Length: 302
Image 1 (cartoon, helix red, strand yellow):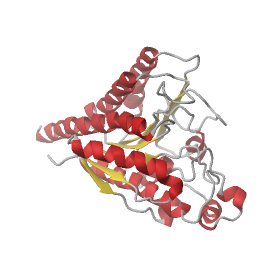
Image 2: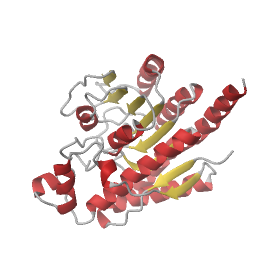
Image 3: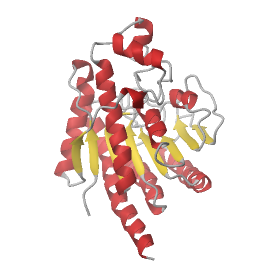
Image 4: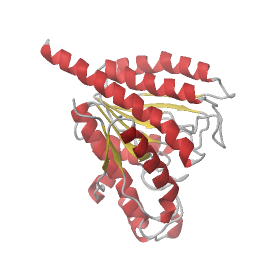
């Protein structure tokens, strides 16, 4: 069996330095621990970006004009559009790889606050939502799972009427909250719930949602700002809780032979801590790939 493949964007601008450092640390862990291979992701095309975003917004991010729109996600710089296309391309590579070999991941961010016509809260392009629209060209039903601390407002607005998509979102903070016109489960966990409570809820609700919707693919945005060490923590999960969450999520889809392509979400602490936490995602993904591949192979022999 070939190893799992994870994709890393080729970004070098100083504005992306912290993320690049985290990604390189994580890539080193993945390779050194034998969890899989790390490959350079491609750049998404303009056509692929426009699957979700409007031409007016894309033009603003390309040119920097008007500045209020171009900088609505983060402060504009000359190569920001190219950097964002690199991150998006890694997400799309992960989708293609997952559809072939059960599991893959993009070692970059998900951009879930960006709407079709604007950025927001450090999200310039919505890589996860572009991924949903890209996947819809290849499969029938897509399950968008978002376990970041913050509500996926941009994803929800942009996919509100897209058929054969399920939005599943656990969050501790919600800005610009809305509900889509498609199947969804949104859960705000307030009052600083324990990791035990969080995992109990997830173990109850996620399997039911998967079985009711019966997706062909899951796109998973794995946020680490639920960690108790995050400077804006609201959910206070321990590292062991996060490890358990990742194992549970990937196993649920592997047991049902449903491919998973994941990307990273928030994580507001040192690059070393972020890499250590996202290592649990990569490890759970690599193990689920083996399990899912074996189950899919067993089905084919029946």
